[in-house]
Image (cartoon, rainbow, N blue to C red; front, side, top):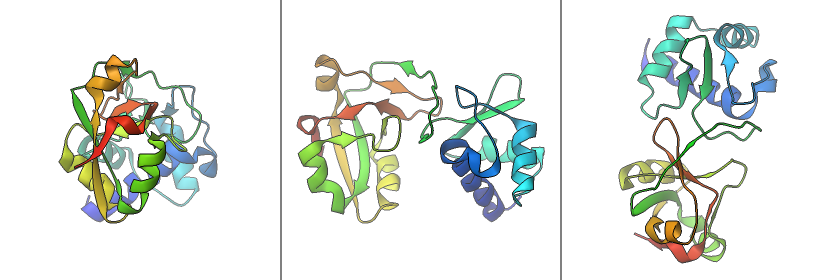
Length: 181
């Protein structure tokens, strides 16, 4: 499959597995899972046809590991980033001493005033490296990278989780733990 088709399928999967499953007639299970055969059938009924082999390729080659199959291979879900109500059990872990968050320059003033908030998602997403944060930030405009003092946050009682694809998650980052790189 070529990159264009892989990207097209991946973006559609993000839409239905993270944000709007009802758009194609799907209902996600409590933890975000949906049967692979139901997903393929619902997507085809919506005019977005792909094979099981193509789906597997999208999951296996996605550089951000956005999707995961369950142990049986018969269910699939988005790894994180949901705006729909799902309860994915993330592993609580102590983060490295600092993490990063990429955003657009136009949001810097608001972030320094209010901190990083989860907005329509379940958590604030943080990156372990500046390169990933840069990629995220550039999607929203002129990128700015925040450094988060996670060591101080942890000492202050904030909790951190890590998703299956390595994205660090927390409920909020108050402004006193932020600095622009």
